[in-house]
Length: 483
Image (cartoon, rainbow, N blue to C red; front, side):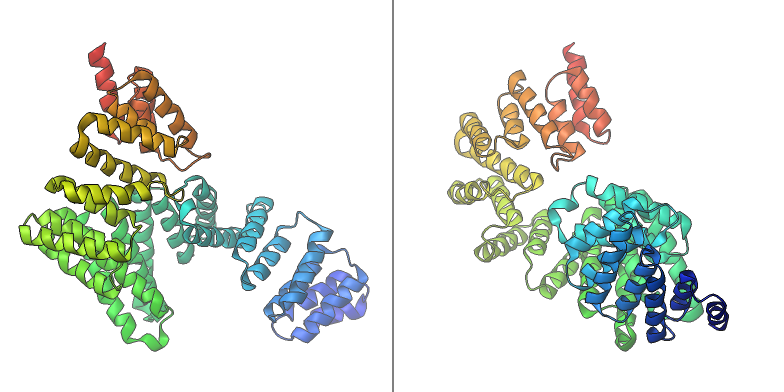
């Protein structure tokens, strides 16, 4: 401060000296900083850096209106200055306008050069919040690629930043790259454990709990069931220690409840996929009690009870689902599970009732492709049980009439028509139009539609699209055998 004041005494007309004095006094003396910035602008009111610094000062003083005005003047002087857009985005975020903030952060990221870390951070965090708050977009890989690239650049420039390494792992999980996500979360967990051993800080313990919980979920996706159980139970144990020191916890009660629920469900599913059904049931029951009978957890519990194979367990599963259906009349999981159970039980009377509910539900335009495909598959099974092949064809045609732009009905008709070339070609073309960026159809769905045409080149394309799926390989085998 003494040096800058002396420089101003020697050259009072230099706007950069006044700006520098304002920067170093921003937190020490806001009034002096404001005077210095205003004086600098009086000497040169076209300096975008000074307007941005003044907006930052007002932002730190929680004066959003003046901050927005200052950042707006900075944008007017230089529309390509990225930090001015970040400032406007922060004002919008603090004002509760999350969508506007995300748009500003996105534009700032596109304008900035690779050396700016702030633009990458704000863009990545805002993008994740947008994906979480918009379930319809969370299944689209297109919405995740750019923020994932930003985080990868950020991790190379600031590898010590655990929070953004953790965020990158969550993005990797959503694009299906579970191996990379597991590696990132293991690194985050190890670093947090080292930090906790040195400082015993509650923030480090909270980071360990979050990393262990997310790590267990990704290990479950890879089929590492034993490891997933171990990490989930570790997260639950550490969660108890974290709650014991709740006065200093950086996580809210809602966040702690979400972590506990995720860890319990992960451990339950890992036991279920390992065949330890008795060990899985307590986790699901506890989760059911904690969430007040959430319909998704009811579905999980019913599936586990049904998989146990006993008559009493299956009866309990039926009762749970029928009770839940009265409260959640339009829940896809509950209705499709009831429909599947009635088909397995050959309960014709209940089939007719549940088919009416599914017919009503299949007209909902807000259904995702996965939900619609699940409904159509159960309706197809019910129609075969009630009326045979003719009824199956009628249901496939009805599905096309309800949503001719979706590939689901065309694929069902191709199956029912025993591989009709014309119908299977229409199913393929419709599936291509529903794939990103025009739709949300994933690679497995598109590969399944292409593999069903009976053409060897389409089967090869299906293999390239989803080499892990058996659809393309089965289609190629049929083409080779037919040749």
